[in-house]
Structure formats: C-alpha cells, structure tokens
Image (cartoon, helix red, strand yellow):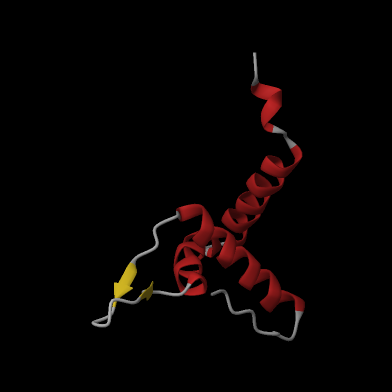
Length: 83
C-alpha cells in the first residue's frame, strides 16, 4: 500500500516524487515475511528512493544533469529509435 502524506512546500513534494521515481526504477523490493505467512515490503519506497537519489544530489551540477536526463527521456519517444 502506498501512503501519500501531504507535505508543505514544493521542494519537499519534488524530493518525494523523485525518490519514488528512483525506487520504482530500481525495482529491488525486498519482502519481509511474517510468522503468520503474511508479507510486506521490508523498506518503504520513499526510503529506497531517497537512498539512491542522494548520489544525484552530491552537487548542483550533477543534480542538474540528472534532471536533464529525466526530461530528455520524457521528450524523446521510444519509437524514434526504431529502424
């Protein structure tokens, strides 16, 4: 279940969305299995994403390049590369 909190400020929302994007892209979801047979995600999507997002925020230049790659992927459709 994905829980969304109302976070004040645009920067916090941007950090939240980028961290979720990173978590969904990485795709490594570790499952925690309980004694009764139930299971859930061991680490939240936000924590997984914020951990991988930190490497892109080491400097402003690296962060801007990271944002440029995201926007480039959005602007360039996949069918452009079909031969």
